[in-house]
Image (cartoon, rainbow, N blue to C red):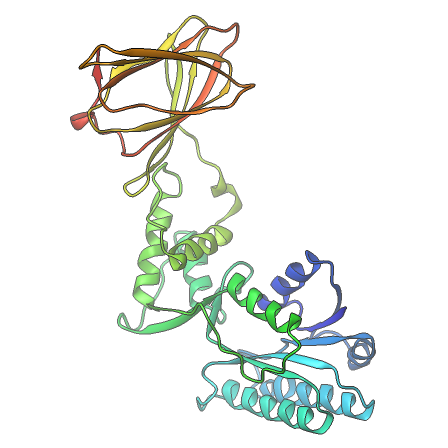
Length: 364
């Protein structure tokens, strides 16, 4: 299938192009700097048109009509003239009944597409999207999430005009999946239901992004259990200056080896990396409640467990060649001893962040 994307240099256009190329579709493109002749040539080659070109915030109000209503009209008239029934998927707006020129010209475009569908019996789908956010959106243009993420990640001030204002958000990946379902379906769905929309206060978006910024160079991570929080975090990272993708980390070195705290979360606990030098050991302690999960990714270790109440004990040997996750057990002393000829490297997760005042760690 050959798919024509109008507005392929726009936010949604860029994302859908990459999305469809991953699925081995052939992509044709048309953008505002291209001549109309190229558009017509690509229409003739296309099996489906993703009409995402449009004007959001032009310097000249007349461009609303030119790049929304008139462009849509040109596409439909050419298809009718050539007696084609090419399927069209069009991105409109959930604010279709607003009195802005943007909404007015989007509504006019919808009417042109519906007329085309009736004349040719072609399939047309109109996606009335809310605010879409994610990577490659334009800051200081038409996306409040992009604007906030871009400025906050650079230490710039942001403005919130109404702290109680709520907006509907749709993550770009969720939008792509909904578009893809329309590409695949044989049914004619004029106004598909838009799913996975989140409603959130603008002030809360700012708070979450500011929190991400405060922790970007730390090992602490925020609560991102909800999809909206994970998606906002991913979007924030995509706008972060590239040099901030790197941060130094502290390590504790002693005769046993290195110990590095990697991630800490009040909700998810703590992840750390450790090494054990040859003939050295770590552990030798027990916890009353804390639980840890270990993975030895390099080296040869002997594990020794002893129940402090019954004195029952057992041991096991693990190596990098036979990867094995093992737990510490509350009330059991656990020791990891290096019995190989090289350094041990391991990863450990704990179900709580280490607190020196309440360590729950007792050496035996």
